Image (spheres, rainbow, N blue to C red):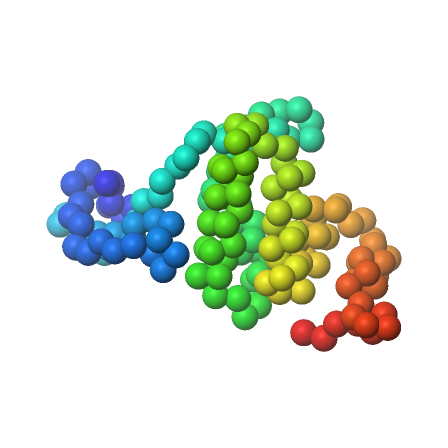
Amino acid sequence: MRCPFCGHDDTQVKDSRPTDDNSAIRRRRFCPACSSRFTTFERVQLRELIVQKKNGQRTPFEREKLVRSISIACRKRRVDEDRIERVVNGIQRRLESSGETEIPSSMIGEMVMEALQALDQVAYVRYASVYKNFREARDFEEFVETLGGPGGAPLAD
């Protein structure tokens, strides 16, 4: 494993253990060249997934892109990185076990929406604003009105 700090090719594993949900192996590494420490995660990949975008383009599934988009939606919210990791693991597992190798991007978007709705209402609205391409404030208002609790009362966070 190459050191992300200095680029040295030979780093040493100091500690290995499974993650809390047993979906990956967490490894603490040390670089003898610059003395830096860093963590890597090793995951099992059941199958190679291809994402079919709305414009017809096909691209390889990128787990980091999913983590990044959910993290952006959860920015400055009280959502632990571990919870985001569990959400991403769950979505990835569902995609890999679906039996399909080509996954429509809309399916991934809906899975993220579903997970964020249960995780954090504000993150859910943030993600929805991009996913559903809100153009003006009225789009937000209409969407938030659909989140109302019993009797149409807005949900508090």
